Length: 232
Image 1: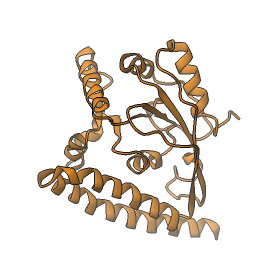
Image 2 (image 1 turned 180 degrees about the vertical axis):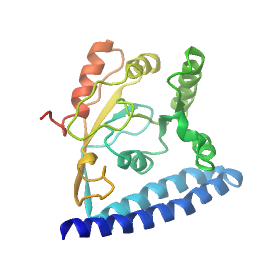
Image 3 (image 1 turned 90 degrees about the vertical axis):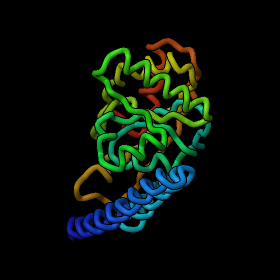
């Protein structure tokens, strides 16, 4: 019976959240063409709508342990589910997120994402693309925006602690920003076709200063983003 309830909740969630998302994508395209200053508001509303559906339809409580940073810092978040990616514009003030290049090919969404200021990551395109990515990131920093990265590179299973992608330390060195690591345990409840009720916790780690060695920053970020996800 509990599985049936979870399945019905998940179906309702998909219908409500993705139905609302279609309307918000349309609103984002209108904002891009009419009043670009509306776009951050539309995107933040998308995050808020998602949270409402998560809490009120799926029955998942979302808890924040610690104070979220704002302004020009590099924020490194554990990535277990789409949950934290969708939640990012709600958590931070106008964040610039490093996102897979393939996502920008989505009709409507991709153009709006570029206009919003997300930063495409094309890992296989060589030094020229890397230089362009760094230049774009520095522009966002100059605008006073926080940069958000998922240093594992893709979603990982709950309970696993893979190494960080090699490019993370390079970005840290080139951007010369402090890093705020954030752990999240969304995989246990959200990363399923049939989602489970329960709790998702964010835990904000201690700020890591700029200028550390590659080995030290990787070790400290890796440990901090996995504090809610101890090895078996």
